[in-house]
Image 1 (tube, rainbow, N blue to C red):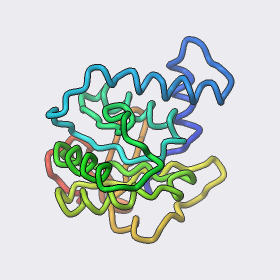
Image 2 (image 1 turned 30 degrees about the vertical axis):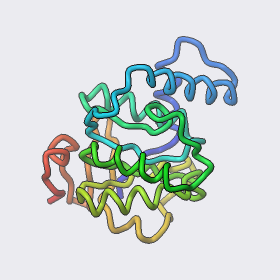
Image 3 (image 1 turned 45 degrees about the vertical axis):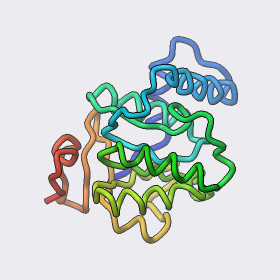
Length: 190
């Protein structure tokens, strides 16, 4: 099974920083950096990837987003482009904004972690994009002591994002994979 270790993503994040703050300050700084991108946002812009995630995973979101951007992909993160949305309230306006944004995205990566289990939006985003594009992958973020992914059972319906070295792959199972670039072009794991 494909996995992404939380410690590996955080190691890469920390290595990219010139100065490291205490963890709580670092989370706040990472969130602030992502929100600073808001100024360059266009409401009609198309994105390659809608990154579905829990806000408390800000450093992981920031690093994975950066890695995908380095590979040439555009990535939508709701609290960067639409910081006016109240993530704590489920209402019709928020759903309409997110639906419009997902309509401008080609795919969805579902960053599932211990924090994601509490999200009320992530399952809805996953279902919407699955129905709209069929191009959805799950990125399980493992704690170091996790041996296997034991998330919500419906997540097993989707292929997994795998990070091997500096390359992303989409896996369906052992021996069934495709490069991330080919997956973005519509290929399925073989």
